[in-house]
Length: 285
Image (cartoon, rainbow, N blue to C red; front, side, top):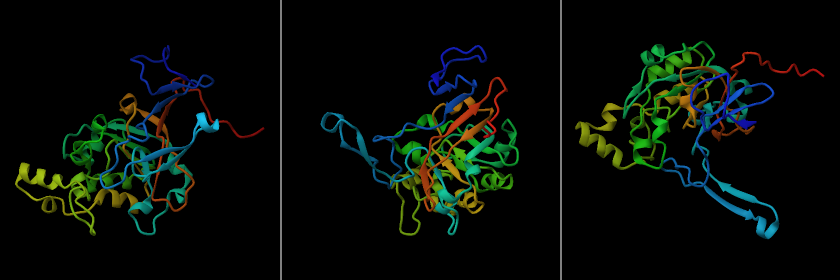
């Protein structure tokens, strides 16, 4: 595959994360953030550690050792993450991680909710069984800062129910959480954990005169609802997601074959076919 530089079949600026497969003309668009030693760590988790155990200078080969929590960077959550008895990553049917769907433009600001009305109004319309990627614009703030993690928008419980009723294949968000951050352990204590960002409930109190626990009594209600419905979720969607927002695409987000994993790093890719001529091979000789 070559980086897309000039293409008569499409107009508009070239985007760094797009490549064209020469034999078919399929366009692949990167929807993942770069991952590595300096990936912003989710508050409460240790930094990703990458060290070389063999080097070219000493051994003539490069081998690396990685230590990480799977919830750093662009990753997929299995139902098991928040639903006791739910399927682990490697137990989720493979077809859940590949299929057609939409990238919806739902611009949201600090501490706002994505509601069913937003999903209804966005185009293209969500069809039953679609992959649904929600672009709030928050991916542009992705970095190691309190605002990205703690001041983001999130899905309301009603929006999660709307997606579950349409049997979304998987749901992706361009934020660090499916839920509103004030409805998570980032801002409130839950089962001896949190608040992970100690300053967050203080900021909310200073700005509103109210307490987080009074205004957000539920703990991760949207994420839990989707997990119980068996729907995987992808957090920290990024890359060139703006390039395919408002479009129907095919999506690939296949994780490791790790049966009991609660989550897994994933490379999320959108695929379009400008020619409309490509078909999957039959598998026959």
